[in-house]
Each structure stands twice: as C-alpha cells, then as structure tokens.
Length: 489
Ligand code: ADP
Image (cartoon, rainbow, N blue to C red; front, top):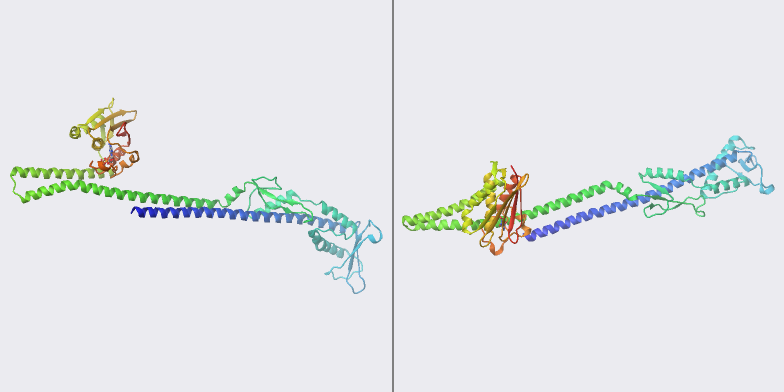
C-alpha cells in the first residue's frame, strides 16, 4: 500500500513537473517567436518607410525637372521628321547654351506611342514629351542613382539637386510609424539612436540615392521592447500561468487527500486493534464466567460472586461504548445546554470525579484557583468531561506517583486553564496530531496505557465549540502542559 502511494506520488510529481515544464517551454518559444516576428516586422517597416520617403524625394526632383523642360527660357524643344513618312523626332537643347558649337548638346527622342507626324512642335506634343521624359526616362535613371546629361543645363541642375537631396527625418519617422501601425505595432522608437544595451535595433538601411557607392544609413531603436513583447503575449502567459497554478493546486490537494486517506486508514487500523483488545478482556471474562455458571452447580454465594463479575465487566463495556458515543455526539455539534459556569467549581468537580484514581496512584494534584471568580458561558457537562480527560491523561501518562498542577488565571476577557504534569511528555512533532481522532503517540513498550485516541479530539472540539483554544507545550523539566483559553461570561 505504502509502496503504491509512493509510486503514484512519484508519477504524479513527474506528470506535474512535465506539464509545468512544457508550459514554461511553450511560453519561452512563444516569446521567441514574438521577438522573431517583431524583428521581421520592424525591419520590413523601416525598409518600406525609407523606400517611400526616397520615392517622394525623387518625385519632387521629377516635378522640378518637368518644370525646367517646360520653361522655354531654359530649354528649347523642337520637333520634325527626317522625311515625309517617318515618325516625329523631338529635340531638346539648352536655350542659352553654356558652350557653343558641338558642345551644345541636342538630345533627340522618338516616342513609340506618339503617332502624329509633326514638322514642328505643338503644345500638346510638348506636354506629352515632358510627361514621358519625366516619368519614363528620368524616374528610372534616378532609381538607378544615375544622372545623365541630356543637356548641359539639365545635367548640371539635376546633379546639384540630386546630390544635395538628403533624408528628411521627420517624414521618415511619420512613414515608419504608419508602417508599424499597419502591422499592429505600437511601440516607441528612436531613429538613428545612440547605442545602448536597452535598445532593440533594426538593421541599418542605406537610403542614399547613389547606393551602394554612397552611404547614408538609417536605423531605429526600440525602448522597453520587453514590455511590448509581454503585452503581445500577455493573455497567453496569464492563461498558461493560471493553468500551472491550477495544476499545482490540484496536485497539492490530491496529495493532501491521498496522504490523509492513508493516515486515516492507519488510524482506523490502530483503533480497531485497540478496540478489539479493549473489548476482548471483558467479553472473554463474561463468556468464561457465564459458561462456568451454566456448567456447574454453584452455591448461591458463589453464583452471586460470578454474576457480580459479569455485571462489572458489562459496566466496563458500556463505559467504553459511552466514551465513543459521547465523542461522536460532540463531533456532531450537539452541545445544547449553555449556562453560566464557574471555572473553579468546574475544576474542583473534575478533581473529585477522579478522586479514586488520584488516591490509587498516590498522586499529588496541586490546584491554584483563580484569584477572582471566573465564569464561562457553556455546557457544564461537556466542559467538565474535557477537564476530566486532561487530568486523566496527566495521571495516565505519568510514571510512578503522578504530580499534576492546575493553575487558573484570568485576564480582561478570557480565562487560562493550565494543566501540567511531569509525565512521559509528548514529542514536539505530535503537538498537533494528538488532537486528531484516533491518534495515539507511538510509545513502544509503554503501550500498555489504555485508550482509543479519542479523548483529546473530544476536548478540542468542546473547547472550540465554546470559542476557545487549546494547545500543548513542554513542561519543565519533564512532562506536558495543556493550556486552554476560553472567553469569559
Ligand atoms: P488516549 O485515549 O490514547 O489517551 P487522547 O486523545 O486522550 O487518547 O490522547 C492522545 C494521545 O496523546 C495519547 O495516546 C498520548 O499518546 C498522548 N497524550 C495525551 N495526554 C498526554 C499527557 N498528559 N502526557 C503524555 N502524552 C499524552
């Protein structure tokens, strides 16, 4: 039985440890995945934000470029055909060339989707050319990071604008925030932060127009990222912790129940052992005496003697059953008669009840009553029996001539009753168990002291039903001291 319980406990501990371990591992993985997803999302968001910001700047350059093309004081656009059937050819050149002759470059274009055949430029054709030039030719050039000199003036101006264009931190911050919010990330960040260990950093992104040859890096750092990660998986962690707590709680409760069941079974065995032992002697002697009465013809005197033996043993049996019954009654909370009870009278009566035993054991009972009369609101019978039980134990568990002291003291609202002996004492580890039903301190060869382990559980129940407390401590130099605290009337 014990082996089985140990095995079950071991298996249960293993299972609970496994469940808790798995939960923790799962939470850790979850955390790691959140960090990974966060890392991926913030880097992607930064790249997108920087792309957009670069696009916006390029868009502005294209717009300015279109303006230059449209401005006849800067650029002259002409159109004609090589012969009657061929497509229109456009020419772009500086209106005021910086260099004369060959160096005043004239760039020639044909537009694939321009079907009209023109001998000179028209406003519509010019607009179409400017649009085409800006969107289809310049934009891809800018994306590649190249500036072509279509004319000297266009090349110079473009180069100036292109080279002086730098990132706009405010716009990047705004775009980055938008990108993060699109990914449901609402964490605080700093662009190009000063490095420190508390920051979670993105990878730096080169946002220069002329990358990879020129470098203009932007990165972002996130503060309190753990707070963010926790927020993300808060409910998962809380649920998981709750499950862990419930599992451990159930485990602890099951272990407690299992152990108390086991203990109860042991106590029950001890009680049955005790009981059979206690019942055996009177039953055996009743049986033998009755059989002798049946078998032989005794004189009336002898018959009377035998019948007295039977009656005496029957009394013993009824005393035993009574003890069990009264304990059971108190346990079922059936204290009915509450009245004003004098503490000193209660104790004197208890000593009187045990007079025969006290004298038989040649005991010394030292009783110091309360200096002022103390009264309780209680049931005199059960309180009396409780005191008798404690006194009886003090005598029972003393070797030789018992010495018992009873002291009563009162305070403002309660009375203390101390019953101490110089008997065999109670090992400290049993200070609580002795008040449990059927419990008896294992006493090796001293176990000839009779009892069922019911007395103290009865006492405790009675005292608690009177809103009092009872506890045991060591008496010096030997023995035990039982202290009862009860509220005054
Ligand atoms: P029992 O019928 O065994 O006396 P109790 O409930 O009165 O049952 O006491 C429980 C156990 O506590 C006893 O078996 C005994 O081992 C221990 N005990 C109680 N009172 C004393 C005492 N005054 N001195 C030593 N041991 C005691």
